[in-house]
Length: 190
Image (tube, rainbow, N blue to C red; front, side):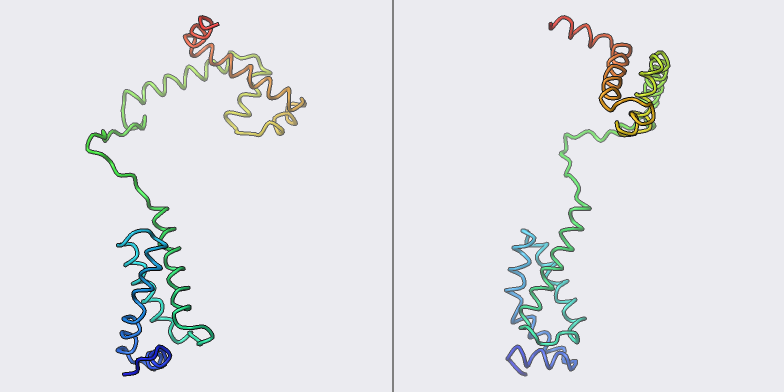
């Protein structure tokens, strides 16, 4: 059995599995260390190293020998770690304490919240319909249709500043109509 890395690579390319096993034994410490430094976790580093060796085994025939085998394997390991970390970031979940209540707060699940949400929607609709037409147009275009201020201004034939002022006034009127207690608290604070 050859012991030189170049000889082991050549034998592994010829299909000698024991040569590839020896390559793994000779390079595992460095590969695992790199994976650990990239993932920051022992279990994740083992998974990344395993994936890197699997990819290296499958792609061994594409190894041209332009660089050292260890350099090629490090590049594969770094790519595997990046893929692994990307997947982990997308699938990350927050751990729950035992004290965390497992309550579904979506209004459509709780009939009481749904009724409150529908009631609030009706109140908001009524409050919007009571706004003067100039203010109603701005708040509908911005808050319901999500148009930018520039498009609202162009649509209504006013300046961007005027659109912003009207939106501010409309929101203030809506807040006063829907939540008069906030105005009372602010009035007392002044």
